[in-house]
Image: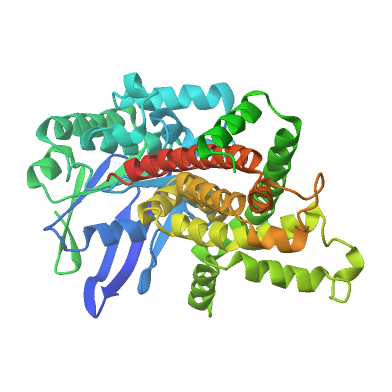
Length: 217
Length: 235
């Protein structure tokens, strides 16, 4: 049974500045769900809360499988992944970076190698697998982040501003990668972008975050 | 008195002919300092990780004390270990005074704050995004800690090398607790001190050259690690 999520009345403040006010958001269908809004409106905060990286001040993130609510434990965290705007590549090879998520799940050997290579090929970095990850360009680093998450085959993939720091060429490549995920039917993608053109190009469902509140676009 | 050049050439002769006594002294020096470093790493690395990952009361004070102890005077450490291990001391029953074990204990005390403090600095200087990246990929808290330690590996290696360099070159503490007994506790630095007193410069110079060579190797390796660490940080 595929994973879905909903947020119920999320609120989050930083230094008395209420970034999220009563944000509710149901997503259960696969596809690409885009959250847009101006810079600094709280999109990243919302995504970090949804991906269980941060706790809300109040409200709840609820994951469900069919009609059943899924407990927010390590097992659930391993069914989802978030690609941060600043990827944070590990100081090792591109290949080792991609296989990290598999290694910590105890997946090694041939299966790990196959899944790693598949993810690398999917983002067009197969030829860079032996290179040091820290030597990649910013666009390639962003693709590495996506491949690192894809290798673990998440059911829900959160992408936080995946093209915010890359050039036009890499923006096009990353958009094609995201469309490729949709065509493959997996994973469900929930992403943020401040780029209206990109939001309209990619979104199956569009949400807008404005003044701390969430609206369906 | 033998000229400096003559002493120097005799020293080179000793080195090139792999003089047995010279080799034994070098081997004991490396064994004592290497064991002390291993012991310091065994206790220091977990403590540096604990200080890096956990927030608790008096943490700042502990770090300040460790930083202060990095500059511990070796003779004071020697005196402290001597008092502990002397026959009337609390650990006198172990009979360790004037043995290589006593020298290892003294050097471990000297190396421990260096390994711990520099190791802690290396761990806390890892980009916080690494922790978040590990978490988003499904790492457990323990796996996150291991990942951060792995990212800090060049800094941690620098800490080990700095500590090894410090104890290899140290003379005061091991002179006090080892006694500089020929064929038993005599190491490079204590031999240099003794042979210089005796006017026997060729052995002292030979050991001095080797000590400098070891120091050069240690610093070259340290430089390589620091360079790799700076590359990592994008500097």
